Image (cartoon, rainbow, N blue to C red; front, side, top):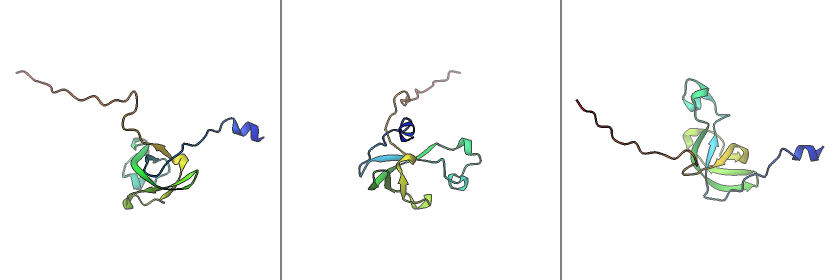
Length: 100
């Protein structure tokens, strides 16, 4: 049975102290996100800094006090923060001139 279960599993990302990560807002309460509808909330919040590696699958994050969630998070709830994601490059807006 273990053989069949391991087919769908993948290796967890390795994090280091000081890495920037985004935390999933999937399990956050609606009151915490301050949005009227859950479907309009962001999927990830952050970036936050990894403060300490507790186990290979749990990390301690440097979170805001106002977030009011536990500092120790499973690695399944976080993703590595990237400055620019391929395919989603920021395009600077050009100025628009309006004639009479």
